[in-house]
Image (cartoon, rainbow, N blue to C red):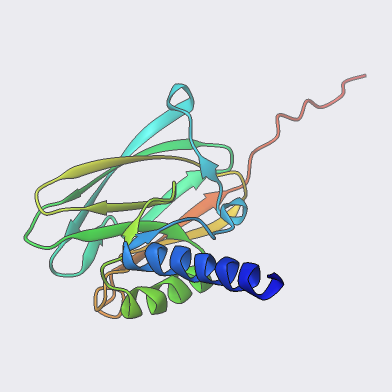
Amino acid sequence: MKNTIKFIAAGAMVALATNTFASGNHLGGHDLETIGKPGVSSKVTRTIQVDMTDAMRFTPTNISARQGETVRFVVKTSRALTHDFVLGTAKDLKAHYELMKKNPEMEHEDANMLTVKPGETSEMLWQFTKAGSVDFACLHPGHFDAGMKGSIAISPKTRNLKLASK
């Protein structure tokens, strides 16, 4: 009886894992804390338009933000191919790209990821919680290797220091 229960449990786990991978969805597994967090629309301080082209480039490629700032990214694909806009560390993006090469039908559902079809526009709200840099890339097979990546420089919060007067 114990072996039957173990066998059923193991079979259910394999079935769930197979269904997850077969469906082509990408669910979770990212440490978003290092790059910020999903933004709230009432706290958006500015909008940045990002264009993704079939020349495997983002426009703009380099973006500046401030620590604590919430940005609305309006991302469009203006040509014939579907592209991704994925925020992450350089290391995480490269690792995710390797996974995408093995599972090219994977769809993105995390807050730091957009998949935009040809001629469409999508939005992402993102708050940059730490100073430093955050990278972005298209992780469709071949696109990342062709140079479809960029970076966001996040400047530290400036403190409002009042000089003590005597």
